[in-house]
Amino acid sequence: MDSSVNAIVPALGAAGFVLVGIGAALHAWSGQGEGRWRVPALLSAAFFVGSLLAIRSGGALGFWGEHTRNDWNNQIFLDLLLCAGCAYFLLLDRARAVSLRVLPWFLAIACLGSIGLLAMLARVLFLEERAGIRRH
Image (cartoon, rainbow, N blue to C red; front, top):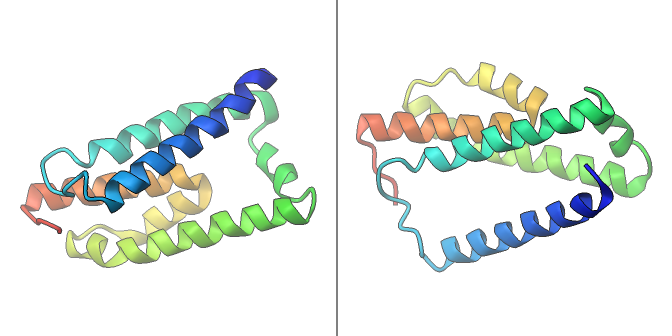
């Protein structure tokens, strides 16, 4: 990607994160309904495509140099690991409740980061919907 796109993508991501976070906090979405699993599934797929573009330009391990460059890059990497770990931990009981094998999903998260985590969330929501489990 060129530098102008690289400057816009994080701003759009941050704006989307803030809008969805505030909307969820204000109960704009009830958390109920069919097809909720489609949102994290779509985000996982879209982020996967974006990651393929990054891999094409920087290689499969291009992220490593970005996370080992300085103290801030180390901090960002550790923050991402902690966030993924917290989300995985919070999903475990729900995943087990719908008989999802969690170890393969942990490996997916360890290898793919948010792509794997969003896919796991989509799968849990799909299985809950199929089982008729309602969450408030």
